[in-house]
Amino acid sequence: MPTDRAEASRRHFLGRTLAAAAAALLAGCDAASRSSWFPKVLDVGELASRRAQRLVSSRRSMAQEFSAADLSPQFRSNGTANPDDSQYQALAANQFADWHLKIDGLVERPLQLSLRELRAMTSRTQITRHDCVEGWSAIGQWTGVPLSAVLAEALPRAQARYVVFHCADPMDAAGTRYYESIDFEDAYHPQTILAYELNGALLPIANGAPLRVRIERQLGYKMAKYIMRIELVSSFAHIGAGNGGYWEDQGYEWYAGI
Amino acid sequence: MTNLPHAQATATREERAHERSYKRHSLAVRILHWINVVALCVLLMSGLQIFNAHPALNWGKSSYTGAAPFFELADGFPSWLTLPGGRWLAMGRRWHLFFAWIFVVNGLIYVVYSIASRHLARDLAPTRADWKSLGRSVVDHLLLRHPAGEAARHYNILQKLTYLFVIFGLLPFVILMGWALSPRLDTVVPGWVDIVGGRQSARTLHFIAAWTLVAFVLIHVFEVLISGVFNNLRSMITGRYVVESEHADRPR
Image 1: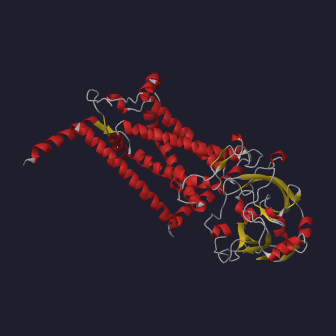
Image 2: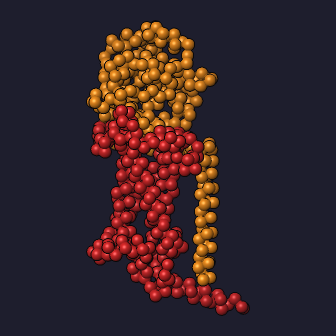
């Protein structure tokens, strides 16, 4: 009997200790998440994922393309559905006839291209799956001009390493605008297109009219909508908070291959 | 001086215990086991954080096929189950994708070690005698009866099969379904995710596999608790496991 009581009290002690330890651990994890150093440790995971993924798949590996039967009945709009910006609204009111895509930064030949000029260039149509960082997927058919074709016109300088997309949509009360960046591996990928059509019709405002980028081997937040300007840079440290994109500045990974 | 007889008695008991104890788990297995415990806890809780960003499950290539999700949690999982607590998808992903690496590397080391050290062949591979004891082992488990004496030195057949299923079935599967969620890894062989019906099916299977692991852990911990919790814990911490003689075995 004494041994049974001792055993019961030991178990009771163990149970309480475990519960207390679990609570302390969880509080510790939350404190670590808010610290300045711990997220940097976790960033090793992003680096390892990027390296490993680029090791097991080639620069030109192709995202799966689907058939018309797989199209989502309605392509979900996420994030900004209609930019709250008077300049954008004026352009939209005129069906973007006065809209121009600026290409500048580290290029030999800065460009200004109208929607009509973009549509006159070579085009690619692809039915692909859009994977949101939240977990959902939608399948849509996109038509647009390969980014590589636009870059070929602008002639990137040797120092250029990243392509930055500057967008029309303000993301907060301060007016911070959406932006994104990709490296040349993704910029020159055959499926990376500046899309002006969705499912055979003009790109709707909810999905990024007049122009959005498709980067089919990364998550949805990389695929900037409402693009106004494409800037080539050697580093994006001077843009926004310096992490390469609006969501990256909120703590999301720059490399969104997983 | 009054302490002396007591001290002597203790020493003798410990000596006797030592005679009946043996090294059950190697240092490598113990370290790998506890790293795995930490990694799986973080992966589960950060995984639920990620799930909460879109708390619905679909079957097929996309979430928008015209069919309604077959599972939905309007408010997601409670914050005490998620890492971090409260909604924070970006941080949940960082935890998840960092500890996924710990988990995979730890698992790879375990598999290589288990083969090289013959842990797999010696302790986990079922013997002919094991297979013959299958029926009895099922009854024993259902009646919560546990082997004592010599028999307690080895894993029983249900234990071996469960460990093998988890190590070589469930864990690789949960990893593979995680990879299926990566748009870049999906390009290694375009369309490979269609083996399970598409990316949203893979997301659902990743989720189901994770909860199957939780079920395994609950049963595992239950068995640890009812078959001598301190002996089991000690053996996974120090390696020492005391084999109680069959006669001294108290009914439970």
